Length: 322
Image 1 (cartoon, helix red, strand yellow):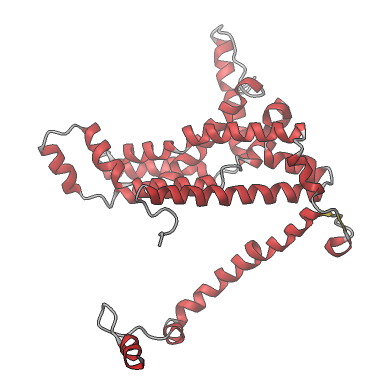
Image 2 (cartoon, rainbow, N blue to C red):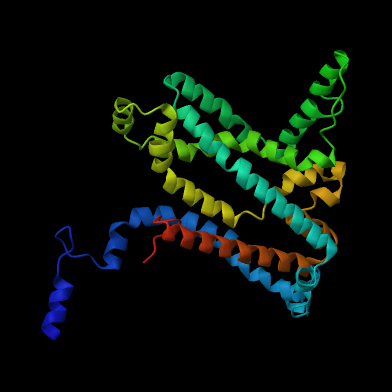
């Protein structure tokens, strides 16, 4: 028995060499490990250690008392969610509506744009188009909202043009009826170009011989897209959609807060702005932490569930299944 165990330990790997102990591999790659330390430290300090602060979700937390001296209230802070506070339900409804709209309209936009850019024959035009489309991503939401105000506001470029030509003006900025459409269009304008980067990288890995063979067989451009292009980037699409689900309940805090006063909270309040208005501004810190904790748990559950579904359809998802 001991002999067979020893033989198993000495068995070479596929490459023909025994795998070195982890400490030897660590010493061998010490330069890479040193480069890894700052990023790992930043991740731990700013993303993982602060998770301990979720303990205030079970406290009547007061900043001037601190965590140690604040009163414990058990599950009272979660009553806003369980008992269905009307303001929270309004925020939840608006969040779900915006999440659905952005899943249907925003997520496919970079895929479509990447396919269109990839079909351009001139590399110079392609690079120029990419540079122009990337620019809005680097603008802050303050600037983006100001640009839309100057274009679509009551005294903006569009309405000034309509007045000058004796047409009826349109109410877009500050109109609650079109607020959700306005938010979605702002997200598409700002982030679609930047989001094409990963899809363009995936498209570049598809062999051109597949397109040549399909063209010889008489396949149209649409059929090539449907049978070659989309299957070629399916794994990336599924991966990014799963990651998007984890952040699906965050639909643009800064973007909405900047425009909330113009349309009112009834149509614009989402979970993040509710946490800010009721939890932080209102001094209900424990409630804010409770809602944020539940939102995080729901996001993790959505990612794990979608990842499991991806495995069912034969995709790796975020991680490989055993």
